[in-house]
Every structure is written in structure tokens, then in C-alpha cells.
Length: 91
Length: 170
Image (cartoon, rainbow over all chains, first blue to last red):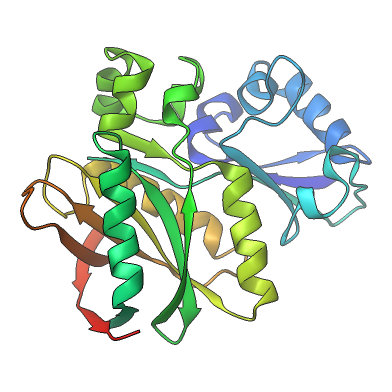
């Protein structure tokens, strides 16, 4: 199982949990299975083409998946995946 | 105290003025509270869908929904995540640290808004897990057209504490 960290704006979709355990062997599989376990959450992370939205970074352990092998990045038991919106703000 | 070369201060002000009335945003890196480099990051807010706006909360979300996409960037910013990740990688490659995030307030003072504090705290909860250093948050105010104002804050426990900026020659 992979520990997936859920960002604050998406926690209402995981019953308020900031971490969930999801089965899967790659980032893509985790996103798919996360979407099955928590309907609607995958659409908040990925666009209609299935690409990660422009304001979201996904990390496996402490590395951004862009510098690994993107959504194909393999995962093994004990790995942690973090979904993190880039910094924002307003006046 | 945060030490910033005058050329980088000028660059932040220029960035804010170039994008006004939209808010600009970017990253500062360096070592031991001495800024060495600036990374301008694209504010992608005007290109975000209504659904994506739910990344914001409360009053700010209501305000954003009432505006056209172009106008939304006047009252808020969202960094492009890819550019932010690329900057963070370059910072790491150069053996520097992420020292701060900056953005502009085009018509309000150089003080963190409630949205700034909420999102900074959100980032703070991720940061510790990712072993990143705690960044400061800098705001460039263009409220006074004659004289821009830049201030830096440490945001912790939902409180913003101003950190003095020392301009250094460069």
C-alpha cells in the first residue's frame, strides 16, 4: 500500500483525512484507484486528457514525478506520494 | 534579516509593474538569508477553469467567481506548478535554498492577506514532509504609484511576522 498525502482543498473528498492508503504500482494506478475510492477526486487532480493540472505537483517521497518518469513512476510498498498545489495567494 | 541585492529588488518591482494590474509571482533563492537569484514564475490564474478555482476557499473563492478570468489575476495569483518545480530543481542543483516566495499587491498594502496566510499555512504542512526549508513570503505593493513597497514575512501558526529586508549592493 502507498501512503497518499491529500492537500487541504481536497480533504472534504477523503472525509477530512490528510493521508489515505491506496494500492497501486505506479503513480497513474494510484490516481486511478484514488478516484475509485474517493469519487471526483481524480478530476480535481487531472484534466480531461488525464494530465496533472497546471497548478499541482506530485511528489514520490521527496522528488517531483517530472524528474522521475512522470505518471509511469513505479511505486513500491512504503513509498509516499504527495499531491501538492503550487503556492498561491491574493490581495 | 533577509539580505537582497538591489538588482533583485529592482527586478521584483519591474516584474510587478510589467504585469500590473495582474499580480506577479516568483521565487527567491540563495543561502543563509542572503538572496542570490530570482525566478519569475507565471501567474496562471487567468487560465484556470471555474472548477480549478476551488483550490481557493471562502470569500476569495466567491470574489474570484464573480470576475472574468482576466480580472481574477488582479486579485490573486496561482504559480505554475511546473515552473515552480523546475526552479526548485535548479535551486537544489546549485546547492542553494529556497528562501522566499514573492508576489505583488497592485492596489493594497504590502501585508499578507487572509488568503496569503491560509495558503502559506497549507504549504507549511507539506513543506515539512518534503524536507524543504521554511520560505519567507515577500509582497511588493504598488498601491502608492510613486513609491513601491516591499516587505518580507515569516508566516507561522497563522501569524505573519515581518522580517526586515536589508538591501545590499550588487
